[in-house]
Length: 188
Image (cartoon, rainbow, N blue to C red; front, side, top):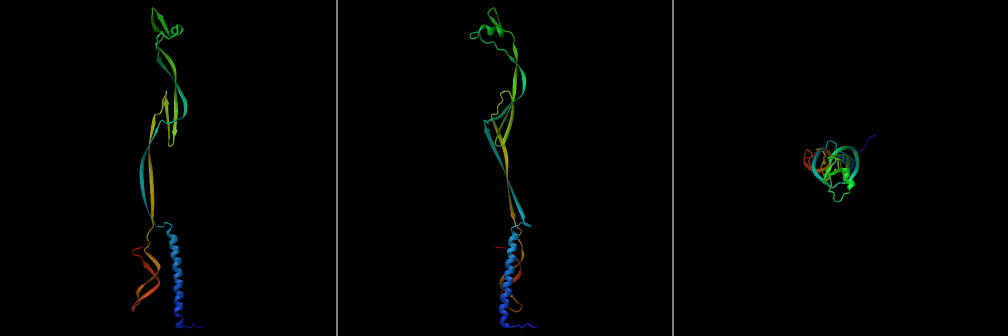
């Protein structure tokens, strides 16, 4: 079986071949665009900014208070003036002799509760302990880091592309349309 070659069919054959190459080129470009979304061989540029933030909490609220121990303290006994106090009370704490008042004891033992208080707020928790201890204010020095990652895809220099241009065919310069291997000097 011999295929006859007719010069009248040549433009139709060329159009079919060029259409086939155009479709293959479009499919290849679509495939490359889909691959470009994944950073294969991409350079990652990181930028870190550190912010120093000061938060002041004035008069924080007590969330919990417990007695952690009791201590015995010696306190000085003060004899009150006898103007407003009954004679029975004076006789319990002092001796009255010849118009002068003298204390029976110069000190007394007192049990003092030592309390631990917990202050809690947004981003802090503070514990203090002692007798009538209170937290007046608290300052928090927080470091906030902002990390920015920029993914820069690797530029591809070589490719197969649909081309239109002016070329030399060995005998003369002519315009052409076709598929070819290309090297990208710059991209736009």
